[in-house]
Length: 207
Image (cartoon, rainbow, N blue to C red):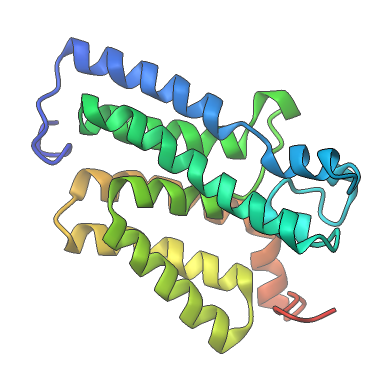
C-alpha cells in the first residue's frame, strides 16, 4: 500500500485524516457555483436552462460569459483548495480530498446528487496535486479543441491523458486516482459520447 501511495507512510491516523479530508473535499466540491452565480445575477434557474447541468458550459447558454468564466474558475479552485488544505497532512489525505471534491461536484447532496460533469474540478484537483500534469491536461484540451472544435472530445481526451502523464512524472498513486476520476468523467459524458459517435455533437462556436 505504501508503494501505491508514492512511498507515503500510512497508519490508522493517516486513514482517519484521509476520511476527514474526503468529507471536507466533498463539502467544498458540492458547492454549486453555477447555480449560485446565475441566481445571484438574475440569469434564472440553471437546472431549467439548456442541459440542466450546473457547470460552466451550461452557464454559458444563459448568454452571460462573465458568469460562465467565474463558474469555471470557482469549480476548478474548489478542487485545488480541497487538495491544498489536506496536503500538509500527507499524500493520502490530499488524494482523498481530491476524490471528495470531484464526487461532491458530480453528486452534490444539496441538488439530489445531480451535479456537473467534473472537467473544471478534475483540472483543479490536478493543479493542487501535480501542476505539470495540469499543464499537460490544458495543452491537450487546447490542441484537441482547436483541431476538432469539440469541447467534450477535448475534455475526454485530456482526462484520459492525465493518468499517463502522472505515471510518467513518477506519481503512481495520484495516477491511479485519476484513472478513477477519468472513468467517472467519461461516464458523466455518456450523452456527449453518443452524440460524437452519431455526428450530432455541437461544435465550439456553433449556434
